[in-house]
Image (cartoon, rainbow, N blue to C red; front, side):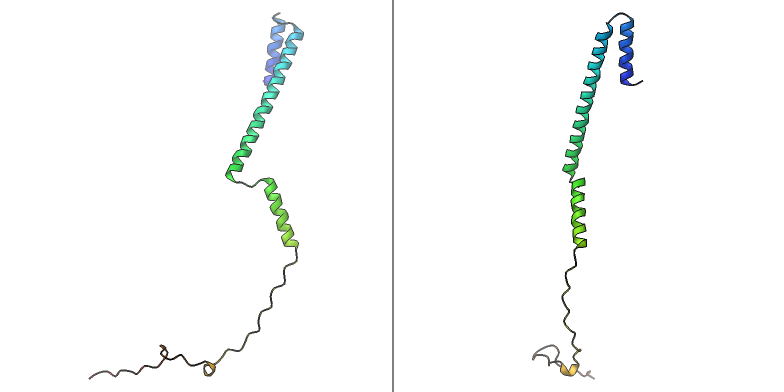
Length: 118
């Protein structure tokens, strides 16, 4: 049995028992229902606000954040790509004869070989 039915049943029993007049009881029941609706709306509003605050504190993206990101991505994907810079032409590989000699005192100089001692 729902809360509305329970209240109506209690009011009907009170009227039948002669404890309350019909009109007065109905008015009281409506007042109780209205107060209940108002309290429910306040609790729901508080819960929604608290959830939003907690999600914001966690740093989660909102629907608005995601919509803005989607719009930005669509704009970037639909824009023409910038022209790629032209690559410099490749030159032919230089042979050993074209290579400059190593600088004086470098490790590339030939060292005399040691002969094994008898």
